[in-house]
Image (cartoon, rainbow, N blue to C red):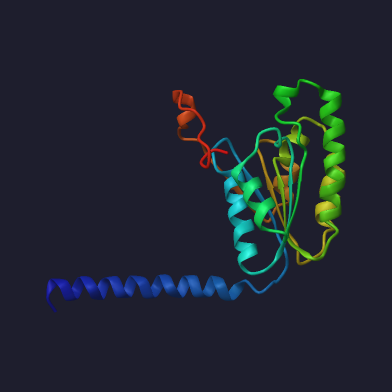
Length: 203
């Protein structure tokens, strides 16, 4: 056996073993139900990742619910795209903008409570395959909404419904409840170097 053949043989053996491990892991996953996914951390891409799952659901013809806490003062590409082209997405925005812009705690709490009514309705709607609660963790971190109320609503959702929660912070309760947790680390960000946010990339 020459060097090339030996290399190919070793590679094949290595990939066979890896395939066996992957296949065994897939075979072990037999439970079918919706899950809770938390996408958190200081890095860029939390909402972007959630919207990727929305696109994936729409590709299969599923219905989706989306609630954006905090955001709404400035238009975003995803908002424009979904509102104009995808009637299968039930979309609600809190519409107050960032809490550090409003500087109105009582007003923000009232807006959060109004927004939660829409989120709670989606979490009871069995026709929604996916519900995204974008930036919800801020509402927990700032104590604008009651933790137990939110956790109970997520726990008691229809069994086939998946929930994605995004945002920084928000305490350990959501992290504990979630089936999947992704913590996105910020290595560096163009904004910190004085580069303006770009339409279609950052919003």
